[in-house]
Length: 256
Image 1 (cartoon, one colour):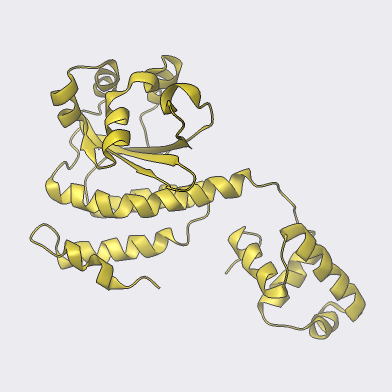
Image 2 (cartoon, one colour):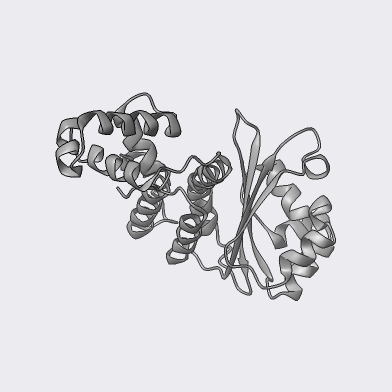
């Protein structure tokens, strides 16, 4: 359980008690996110705290030259204007996007306008404005072990670019980045689907039933149930019945 104490450093004139309560709720929800659909709902939930209309996120490895050498880029369009990403990738604007570069270098929330103030006009910012995204935020986090970068963009015609919004983004985006990483890893893992009977067995394992009790419920022998359990362990790469249940829940095979 996340303790509210870690939010105390944010308790200043910029964040209200309601802000802190919402941040705590969104942080906790992020720990239960395993799919891209859940990530989208999570990001849209941030609208109750700060104003924005468009959002997306991307993740990739960070070699010596992240922008040019790495083709393994994951991208999630949460609510971006139709056609923007097609133009952005087709024209390879990611190779010299000053907003993206600034976010990756600073590892702190940056706005389009403050980047433009320091770097001058750019094709990417001009493209964003053409699609109605006049300003917004970009925030990048880096996993120190895998060196994978995750970047979130929140923008729109009139986004909230206040210092309060920056504080909120600084706190919540690392949670969202971890959730997005889990979603990507789950999608990329090889699929070992359970049979309908195996799923039924896992459901009863979740209820704490023994092999004998499950055999009575399913009207089969205990030996058959043990055989199903053995297959489930192999398919889910689990070493115990409890781990079978945990992995089945984590993988969305059965409900919590």
